[in-house]
Structure formats: C-alpha cells, structure tokens
Image (cartoon, rainbow over all chains, first blue to last red):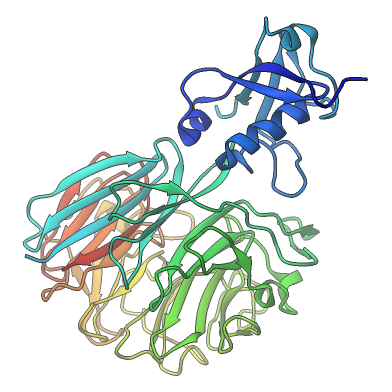
Length: 106
Length: 371
C-alpha cells in the first residue's frame, strides 16, 4: 500500500485553452499524494488551479466531460475508473499524462 | 466627451468597440477569450467599469469572466451552475422526458441597482442569480419547477432562457423568455412565476393559444413606460400594455414578421426596431436586402431603414441578443450579423455604417454609454 504521505511527481500536459485559462506555460509537474491515479492527479490539478474546476470533469459528479480525453503511453485512459493507477512510465516521470480536447467537428 | 463601448460576443471570442460621442472613429479590441463561444457580455448600469461575460466551449464547459476596469483586464469567476434540488425532466425533441442538463449561460443581466448582483439565463432553461459579483450562482428554482416545466421543449437552438427583463420600479419583478416555453413573470424576486403568454398565437404548436409552449425570441421594455413590453416571437411582433398580462399583434405591416431581436429607442418608448427575416426556414433577409424596420408609433406602422445597409446579395442573420441602443441624445442603434459585421447608426436608424466587417459570427451586441 502506498504511503499517503509520499508524493509522486506527475507530468501533465493540458490543452491550449486550459493553459491560457489557468495562465500555465508549457507542461506541468504536479506532486500527487498517495497512489498516483488519474483521479488523484485531477484533484491536485484543481486544488492548484481552481479555475479549471468544471472544465475537465463536471462539477458535483466529477464525471469526465464528454469531449475531454486522457492519454498516456499511447493508450487511451479516458474510460478507466479514476482510481486506476497511472502507467508506470508516467509514475516514473518518463512520460506525461496528456489531457486533450477530443477531435470534434467536420 | 461622452462615448460608447460596444460589447460584441461572437462564436470565437469577444470584441470591444469604442468611440467618442460622434461614433465615427472606432477602436476595435479583441478577441478576448479567443476561441470560446462568447454568448453574451453585459455591463452594470451602476458601474460602467463592471462587465460580465459568458464564454463556453463544447470541450471545456462554461466560464464566466468579470472585468472591473471597463474590459481591460478580466478574471474568471464562478462557473458552477447546479440546478437546485430535484432536477426533474422536460420534453425532448422525440416527445420523451429528459433530465434538465446545464449546457451554457446564454444571457447575463446585471441588476439595475447593484453591480454585484447579476442574473444568468441558461440552457437547459433556468434562471440563476449571483449576489457576489459572479463568484457563486444560485438557481431561482421556482421557475424551472413551475408545473408546466415537464412540457417545455427545446427550440432549434436548444432549450434556453435567453431574455431577462427587469422592472425599474421594483427589483422583485422580472420577466424572462424561454425557447420554446414562452414568457414567465415573477413579482416576488423569483420565488413564484406565472406564464405571461395570453394573446400569443403560434401555429407551430398543437394549441396555438396555449398558456405555455410559444417560441418567444426576444423582449424589450422602455424604462419610462415599464408596463409596455415589446416581443419578437418566432413569427409575430407583439406588444403588451399591461406588463405582459395580454399581448396584441403589431407586426402585420412588416414584410415578414419573423425575426429575432427587438429593441426600443432610448428616449422614445414608441419607437421600436426589428430586423425582419424571411422565414423560420430561411434565416436571412428578404430578397437579400438587409433592412431594419422602425416604428415610431409603438408598432403598427413600420418604415424600412436601408441607408448604409447592403441592399443586394445579403444573406446574414441577426440573432436575438445582437441588437442594442445607446443612451446618447440622438440614440445610436447597433446590431451584429452572423456574417461578422457590426453596424452602427448614430442617428436612431436613419443612416448606417459598419464598424467592423469580418468578425466571427456575432451572437450578441450590448452597448454601454460612457460619461
């Protein structure tokens, strides 16, 4: 079991609209406490940048917005439960977690 | 010298157009919130430096922004619009019942008396209010929970609350318009609501004179004659002289009485403006001629205003929130088009000129008259 007092540095890449909204330049590194999960990353992200609440997952339900996707290591994590551990390369910091706007339009 | 600030919401961001009182030379700033669909911006009547903006994106949802310096800088404020209590259902296109689901804020209406109080009309149709400058939003649930709510259904643009009219005599009295439910009014600050659609006749619904179900596109009121309301409906231009209790048709003399916006001259409650559109199936001006129609008699008699507007090959639309008036002595009129033009008339509609021609599709136009 992971010690909740320990943190894991997770690299996070956000889409341009959200970087501008939160005044973030480039890639983020977030210290995620306990087991590094997708939900844990989003919790820390929203704690650090409250303006992003409601932009990636819905207020109240924490359900992923329909046109937001989570990718890492060339895999689509969008449909994984939020308590699923992140892939090992993301935990090691060799790969980022990509949060992107889905392809939509013509 | 007095001036004006025109707030333009577009499909791809917002623009601010400013001029002095002559309204001849314009400064164009933007895009603000680049890439975000900016449905509406509105300034406080009490504090012209206070402006609210509603920007949304299908990917990332709703943002409300606030400026306290006349639009120079902006701060995101609260974006949580949670329906209060049981969400309930409304009618969907296929006749089934569907839970209310927040999509976006269509219209922001700052209080006439308090810069920190602002109303938001949203899709799916509901009315929210913030009393802290947009940081927190509380639904006035009595409207959505009206007994007719399960019968409300979306128009082609979604089931949206798009118009909020305040009564300058009493802050507790409001009118709202919903597509496609109609007009509702409250006299107790939003706790209870009554339909205000008597006299409307809509051939697109099973009971044309039903209490609820009309596709009202826009309302306008002159503060000096608050019991009179003007309405542009899906078809029909209507007027009420009893605070919305009953309505009568004033649009028969128009070449077509389909359209979206309606507004009133700043200094004359009998001078009304509409932009007739060919039909519900052809959302562009009749015969390719962009004409604003003005009535100086409170409806009934109408004159086309064409000087400076394109009179051939024009096939743009003017959406419901995309017309506004300033309060300078000679009353400027402004409107934006789906083709990205914003036109201004500094002489109450007699002559027109474009301020800008190539913005993204214009969703809304509001005007602040500056001291």
